Each structure stands twice: as C-alpha cells, then as structure tokens.
Length: 122
Image (tube, rainbow, N blue to C red; front, side, top):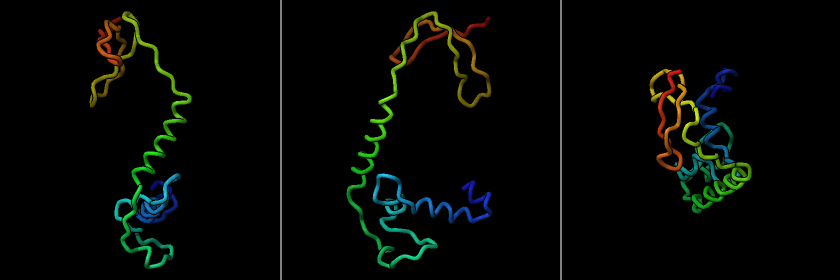
C-alpha cells in the first residue's frame, strides 16, 4: 500500500494484486480461497478462470507450509532459563497506559512462564 501511494498509483489495485498473488508453497491465492474463484485484474485472463471452482486440499497445504516454517524456526530457537527469586527484572506497564517499564524483583514463580514480583522503588 505504501509503495503504491509513494508511486502515486491506485492503492486498491495494489491490494487486488497482492490478493491475487500466489504465496510461496501454495497453489491458490488468498482471493481464490476466499471467493472460490480468481478476481478480475488488469491482466488479461480466460473467462473460464473467473468462474467459481472449489479447490480441495488447501488446509493440508497450509498445515504443511506451517510445519516447514516451524522446522526452520526450531533449529535456532532455544528455551529460556527460569528466573530465580530475587532477580531484578523489568515489568511491563498495564496495557493502554503510557508508562515506562519499571524495575521489579521476582518473588516467586507461579506457573511455568509466570512470576510474582514487587516493584523496586530504589
């Protein structure tokens, strides 16, 4: 969208082009999955391609693509070490409030990835 605006082209045509483009590893575009047909564009195409046509096996393709992405991500991903009580950490402010992150001290671990902490006033 930003490229289209910078080039002074129609952003809606850019969005249409993006939705008509096949993502890597799939055989259908997002528009084909949504409407069960191709959408009109500025490129010439046979009228038969614009007729609705249900495509099977999309969920399997997307699941396979997701597995491939997970495989490559998991090659370099590492589990974080647990935080011990007494460790100084930064605490995220409540959502919607514009505050800075504050120092806090971990008191105890409540769940696998949740901790109870007290704000460090010093």
